[in-house]
Image (cartoon, rainbow, N blue to C red; front, top):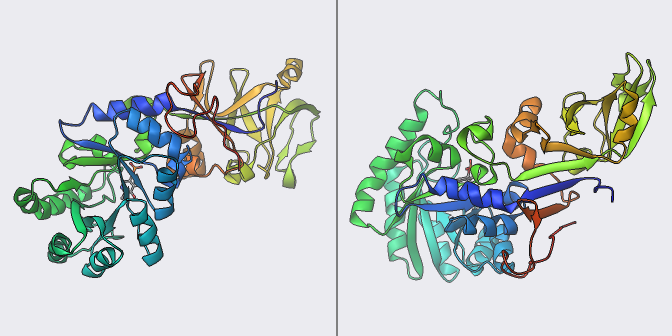
Length: 395
Ligand SMILES: *Cc1c(COP(=O)(O)O)cnc(C)c1O
């Protein structure tokens, strides 16, 4: 059977191992919160969440209320889900209805939680990110007090978020943020030992044990991508996603002939071209025009010409054996034989970060789940409603 035109295969066992590997660096009693926002960084939120929990995560975090509802509707009743983003009143109701924890940094949002029937809150101090949270430590302390007192409101946590944890040469800004947070939260934690204190994303978790506190919020590393943009191998992270297509057509391209919109590739000498039915409509970005490589038959081949919405072309070389590659699987992110293309490599070519590469994949790309190559068994290693032999989601 020819492979699907475009497919993202997600190895849930890799997500489990990444979580176990992250857990192994955490002290006793420090929780791992797996961040599964943006559909699990493009990997599928529900499946990723389950794998992360199997791997030792004990909390989940998302960006918005709808993402919390999605997890609950899929049957993930435990553990706690933290909605990290800003919420309007309707979204706050949805988050609380999903039994999710929410983030607050002013008294009016504590009152809004109380008014919506109550819920669990985390107070956020902005120590330098400059987004959500209050910059004012005294205000943050007043919000803590308000949350302790408001009827129906349960004060659960105190948190912050780092702006430069992934930049090792940030001129000490990470340490400054950490110090600001530690000096605010230290006495509070001493007075209330059951308060859950958390600050670290993946980069902070990997770079400084002093940023772990009671819980770390890891996203990118859970999926086996490197928060510093380096080869994930170096930090023993295992990419969970493979992106593939196949060679739908092989054709002769004579010297002087072109391929694709705008004739941005013109053959200098006779060659063979392969056509792969994947394009920017799938999230394989147009910035990769004349600027990527693809694995076919265990070797790297250059993407040539413009990436179009539904197709790309690759130069298969002058060898007449190229014709035999028709129908073969093509790997855009992942490994074949001794070759490997990482999301970090693709990100480097696009001048962006690995996060954006996996998040860019559109719903048109079916996600297929497996554990180290074995299709998921209907019951054994999956719980819940979406247990199917191979869970392929199309939209
Ligand atoms: C997305 C996010 C995280 C996870 O960041 P990674 O770099 O993917 O580990 C943690 N905390 C907050 C507040 C976030 O928005």
